[in-house]
Image (tube, rainbow, N blue to C red):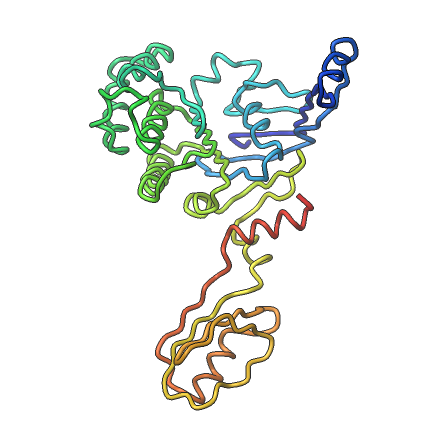
Length: 327
């Protein structure tokens, strides 16, 4: 049996609608019009213990609604969720002690008090034994390099510093599952790498199961190969990132630096992006050509000094995936 089992999950919302303007606002006091939004529709998936899975989709796809149901915040209209043997909504008190949650745009730390005071409050909330708390805190402080931040009020921290403290706070009670919603949003490159390295370390060291939602494909590439794609409330894809790349990465860029060339060889089915002295950059349609064929033609007429093959940007690949499903 899987560590996380989601079966035929459904959730709808009733949203009040009215046209703009004062007259319509007055009319809405007496007659209200509602729209039914199917946020999540018949979603099912399984996740094994210790897996890192990316749960992605465009804005409004239903990601946050799913995560809130997995966290026990929302009760599904129908369907079943079983995580580590518990129903998140029905067994909420027991369940929340086994999960950690980090929302990139929301804070669980108290704004005006030092980080260490927030940690102490969380220790009391989760009823963490003193010895266990000290050990876990010291470990997290070291791994996330936040020792110098503990006595600083949260409001005085930079975004990158706060996110590292947020992640530490979510793991003080040693949860078995960690939900990460845009954990690196707005961070600089150095902070992003630090957060990613820590996530991989905690997954490897403590076998924490991690569900990651992010629009930053570099986060996903760095942390996992399995993605679940959701759109319009429906699950569209559940599989490896490498298969997505194979399916949609049909173009590559080829850089060739050469010398001693008198006449460029004729290359069919490519677009020349840049053409300089002793340098050419091609856009190669991999369905119609191969890198080796192009290189071979150049090697016959000149000396090749360097070759660089650039894969298609992962963001562009995901855009193609969304376009295929009309998202």
